Image (cartoon, rainbow, N blue to C red; front, side, top):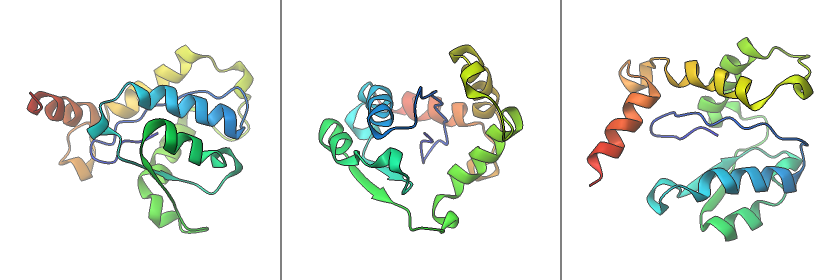
Length: 134
């Protein structure tokens, strides 16, 4: 998942690519956040998002779907997927990837300066947003 404003990435490994497993993982990750930090989700049209109504009801957020073959509607996701592929190229056996390796991949991506963030890192922007909320 990529937070739209700060571009902070949260990676999770799914045991299976099912709607139930995806729903459980997304709900677990977002439930901890304050209501203001979880207003909408933009989803792909894959079968893993079939239970989006359950996610919407549990979290109280709106779900939107990108149009088919419209990768420009999810540019941040496509860019991050490219960065992740540097660590996990196509053909990688994900059964051999553990949670520690996932965090090892997530950390440098979240500490990478971005042009869209005025060359700040996603974590720097996130820290400044949290500091402003008192």
